[in-house]
Length: 192
Image 1 (cartoon, rainbow, N blue to C red):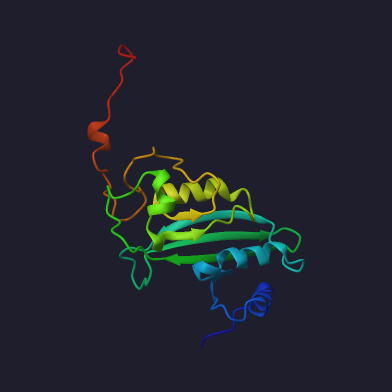
Image 2 (cartoon, helix red, strand yellow; image 1 turned 180 degrees about the horizontal axis):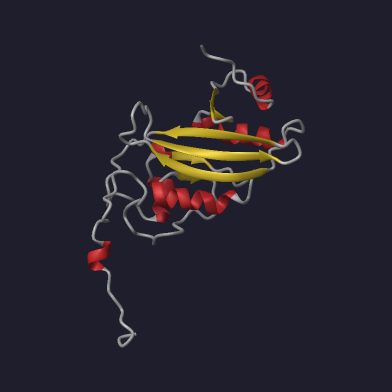
């Protein structure tokens, strides 16, 4: 028997966005609202600015690759963990993305080409204008998964180098890498 999901922010979201298809789910007492990617910025702005919501802290922003995950209908997801300190509430937002181009290793563009020539299926609006602390979290998700955050003021790799050619946390990336270990120059103490 299904039950109605209860969270103080859900009625406000439904009232503010009557024409947007928002889906809610619950897992271990945490509520997740699935938002269409074209609406993430306006939904996030509402949750941040509305005086009854006041989600003033973006505590978490991460990516997920659902390749070969049982029952998954989308390839990638971006999760936003929000906290309203004044109201003592937590809420998760999730956006699903599906690539329109090949994702295998060695196909990634250089950072400076991503916004113009990157996969349109992996582009989502940045939430940096709402929560400035999202800048580095978005950069990490971009680097590891190839999700392009349109509007991020400094969208470049943060853990690998520009021109790496791949996104290392994608599930189609080989566990042993694509030659990084074999081609890595070992520097000894004597040779340094």
